[in-house]
Length: 334
Image (cartoon, rainbow, N blue to C red):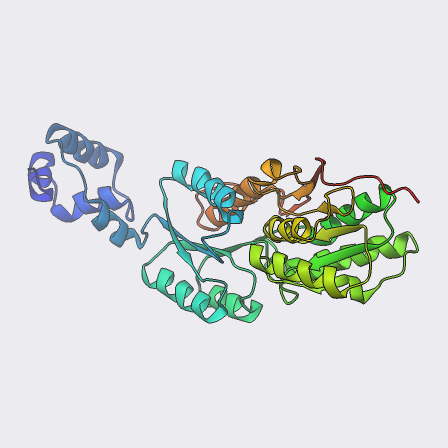
């Protein structure tokens, strides 16, 4: 197997010159560059990728932090990231924080210590100050579903306020006035903004806000099931509900059926995300679709732009949801 010494001897240059050609860190004359390249080709010499990366202080790896591997929410997003970084010759290392901020911080430090070229953060409950601190330390970070005003070129997010408004307004358009809302984790900016959109839609139509019709959950199926049971047993009457994600909607639907109620005849439901199972539920779930694949691509493009592997920054950082009408909402006749 040929070595750098063999290449240097054939090209008539020093080993240091061969290293400079391989790493590209120091310029050599075009004639010397050509001789070294011809010698490598003649000897079938393959530069050691690890050595190149160390010389360039690059690992060609992108670290990605997600909140919960068990959630189908992240699958399309990760696919968008992967499809974008692979053509740039990079690979993805993914870690899961289990929606725990402390574990999230440990995961970021782990990815940094692996010498990842940059990180994409897809977790909602880490403090902005922590994230800005890593950026100030010189690390390259992009964020998906985080709006950090101080880092506008790094933040890719959905207009969740608009999504909450669209979902609630859709139910109002079908004649509903007693509309409940099941939030996700209310400290989560996504859940909070969807609640804001719900309240804004009610206010626009002069429908009084009734806090008894709002229950807080945790974005899980079990949380949706538990909170729907409680709402049916102790809450005031309602004819429709906007649920802040499809996983909670799946649990809520089970609780409704166990109460011998029908969907949508007795209770209309609209979800959020358009998870893969939404079209297969019974009835198929009306929901707000997040463009998660496109958001993943955008977050990756933002990071590649920082790493100078992408010429231009992404031209869209704020995305809008799309309403997907199926059969879980029925008209309410007064």
